[in-house]
Length: 206
Ligand code: MN3
Image 1 (cartoon, protein in one colour):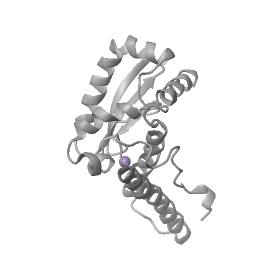
Image 2 (cartoon, protein in one colour):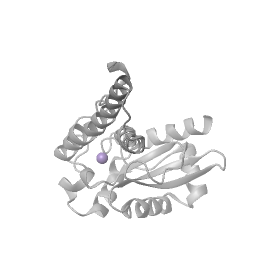
Image 3 (tube, protein in one colour):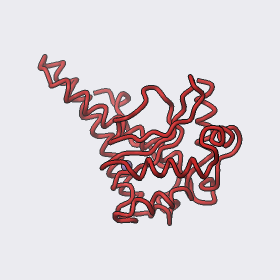
């Protein structure tokens, strides 16, 4: 199999200890090296299975293949976005959005505080495993909160994701046990608004 056509785990844009205390070194290391790596391996394993079946002329269950691929690729891509929209507190992380994004949040949600409230409520109420996300609809010029189940359910097709927050237990359980709400309170200290803002600029131009 051509290694260039497989997924690989990207390095984090900061050190494992840099997001503490919002996310501890142990929590971040396991999340990145075990869970994110798991989706890399999962997607690549499907590619290999398909290639083998095509060579042999055998017929894998395409419904199962499609579901598995969507799950692992969704998981892989969401984690890439997640790492990039976090930054160490006070060194790019925390505070509030600026520029056009700040104006758009005020226009669509009324205020940044109201946006946070809606985003937290959507993310905290994910049943089982999933994500909170902020997306943008170019057609209506609206920011929309998305509640993604697993890595791939409830997604608005083709809408760019500006901000994603992992609400799987594996994202916070070492640090917060069952207290997802506390994790979602502390995550705002490490949100990289510069990255979220530049994703918004690209989404408007796309
Ligand atoms: Mn995760």
